[in-house]
Length: 471
Image 1 (cartoon, one colour):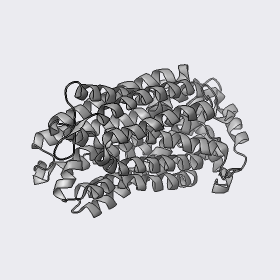
Image 2 (cartoon, one colour):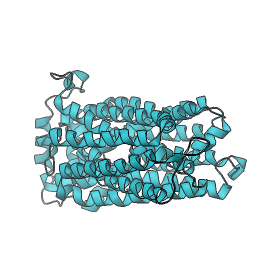
Image 3 (cartoon, helix red, strand yellow):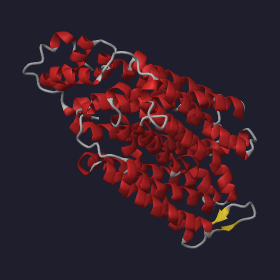
Image 4 (cartoon, one colour):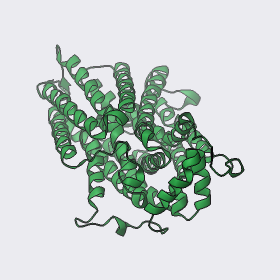
């Protein structure tokens, strides 16, 4: 999408690239976020089928569901180095291929063990997308648009989650159930995974069409190419921006882990990024998106109704992310996080109270009677609202912009790896916590939400309106 060098002129008298076109470039990068959301949520409609088809123990199912998250942690760490060495767009292309291979293999799995292996491969793609997209978007976005464009990553994630849940619902209801035969005689749950292949191919194609990050080009010594890209993005102010970038990139060598070291083992800003990432997951948001259909079935809803409820939750997530996009550059990052932490603490506390007071059926599943069922549904969706308007998108905005140019991709990869490890911890332990009692599970997530409020107040700086070179 960058203009050819011959058409750029010397940059004098040119108008900056339109906001719409910059948004389109950022949207291509955010397709990685769409696949990230799709791939992590598509498991929701297949959990019950995996238990039945593979006659798997609940612990094995928990490992299968969360195995992608271990791959994501590894992918996040590797992606930072790959993005710094080979470029943001080339890493996106490699990521799209991993998504394709993982989707094909997961749908063709014959045991929980090879299924887990394919999911680990897909997790590496998810982890890479979680690093490359926010870094790239932050590096091509003007400061006054960076919050909104950075939020595209979270919007793409929640759209991916929604499309995955809607796809699961459509496939399962068309076939009759997740284990019933669907197209070409393959069981419906297999098609749930194969449906990720078309958007993964589109992501790779899009990555071929967008320009490389100018900050990466300068870091690798390709100053002339960086200027061409900057002229396409900024017009007449491209030369001045190039000088700023060169000033902040003190060397052209590839960043090393040693660059992140500080008094407490790592630089303070890196620890803050790790804490921000971890709290985004420790509040339990992905329990809603990985296990909600099984959860609502456990409290008495049918498979079809449970999948429909999950789709409604996905719509709630999209709407609230749009709210965050509209407000993040006006209200700021810090106020949104504070409000979100307070809201999540209250709604998770309500869910803990409802499930803690619930009775149990003969199978040990909670039984919600009277107003308890609607109250749990309302609290769950209000919780998603609070998360989607704050910690969901704002975490990605901050991770993309809070680190200085020289260490951005590497530091972001460490923070993203922490996020995936926290996600794994929450997802892998939920089946056991569910068996112990949902009141206990949601009580722990309530405590994490309360702790996130203290963390924001103590450590998170406001970055609204600052150029990346000021960080």
